[in-house]
Structure formats: structure tokens, C-alpha cells
Image (cartoon, rainbow, N blue to C red; front, side):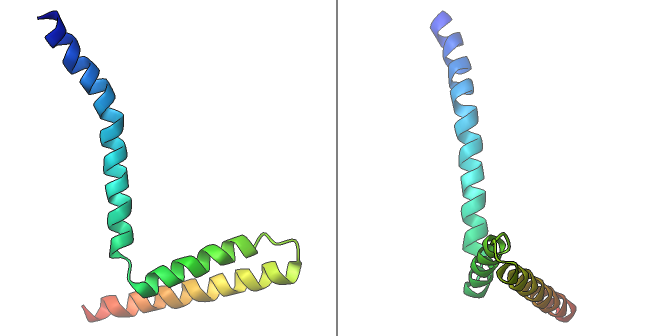
Length: 86
């Protein structure tokens, strides 16, 4: 009987972090699965621009910031236009 009582406590302690991790991983996989090829390309480009924005050369950093601004503005405009048609 004592072993039965200890068992659920152990399982609960061990199971909780793995369940949270599993849920988190499933959510991340689902988000990535929902991205279109266009969205994936945009995401990768923005990640590159974020990296470039911390470049030691001012010209490279400025161009990266301007490119991010333009890409985000364009993507936002596209989303807003698509929502008005729905």
C-alpha cells in the first residue's frame, strides 16, 4: 500500500516537467508547420537582419535596420489587406 501511494507522487513529479516540455515542443512544431514558405523565408531574412544590425560597421547595421523596417511594414500591410477581404 505504501508503495502505491509513493508511486503516484513520483510519477507526478517526473511527469509534470516532461508534459510541459512535450506541450511546448508540440506548440513550437505546430507554429512552424503553419508557416508558409513565404513566411519561413521572411522569418529567416529578419533573423539575418537582426544579426547584421549589431555589426561593427555602421553602414551594414543601418542597412539591416532599414531592411527590417521595410520588410515588416510590407508584411504588415499584406496581412491587413488580406483581413479586409475575409
